[in-house]
Image 1: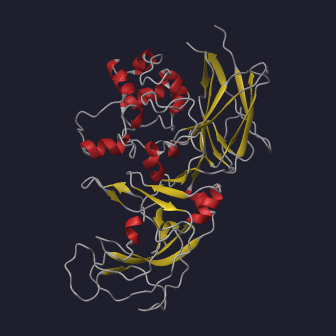
Image 2: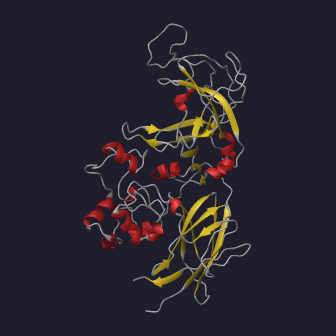
Image 3: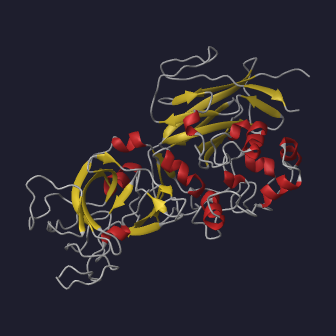
Length: 467
């Protein structure tokens, strides 16, 4: 059968475009060397570094939706193998029943394992889970941006010295550095009707805060009262004290709700699940810092025996440390725009920690950047109806386009790292995906077949009739 060539031309403006996915972007997976993952990526190489490249392809998350499949499995069955009878979602069960090999994946392509009305192969090609009936083509996720560490560093820096008062643990003074939460929301384009944010950690912990001042609730806008510094207490951790600050002095800094990435000048240690306790260790790469709404003094932990010296635990004090979310990976701005669904970020939660990224989504109107292109065959004729899927790296599909009669297509996308996947019935593509980053531009080594001009990049794809 004669081979059919296909040229997919992308004119991407300021963009990083490479024909192979960077290994550093590989999805977080405790089963990276597992034969089942390798089988799937061999049959569907375009799925590399998408949300399908993960345990969640075959294993369910928690019933309440707060944790992804990895955390749910480990919290339920323990971190060390053997894990026992680990549950499978319908797609995982179908794959197992078909004898768990590459041919099994092809055998179940036409089935609708999760019963959502879409075949397994249709969902896979569109970057939706074939084993989750709440995740299917046609859903409109809320607007979303992914903020890399470099992007966050480009925002105005703010540093503040403050007290973190804990209920059951040791209180501490520290200087946190990062970006004001209000500045971050402005950068991503928070809508004027946004009322609150919910901040998530990958282990399922979350806290909700109003944007504007609301009584004694911690709010995004700020500022907060500076309060007084209390020094010389043997039950307080004084890891950092500003010069010339002594007991009884007013806190010198203006205090705001902060997305912190430095503590006392050092990067925050990335969080991970402690294998002994199954709880979160570490506080980074990002920690949400709410200063005390009611400025006050430290007190002993509630678990400590009373001493009667005026420093015993006081339930009426502002114990802001308990609202200081560690390992922030996602921030939802509420309410969600009409007609959109919640963005399913949980399966990529630990991957976001590993790569120092934060997902911000919901009630935003972010600045977008045009991704335009044209699809041609090897003779230079336009090819219509080629589906172009845009997925956030390690997360989900957030955009799509289809080539028109003249072969052109266009999609506007906000800040983020994306995987682009072309598809059309009857064709296979080589390469099957391209990675890109918006809006940054990099110099990169390209194959000789890729031509670079001052305003566009051109990438060649060859399409063959599917076997």
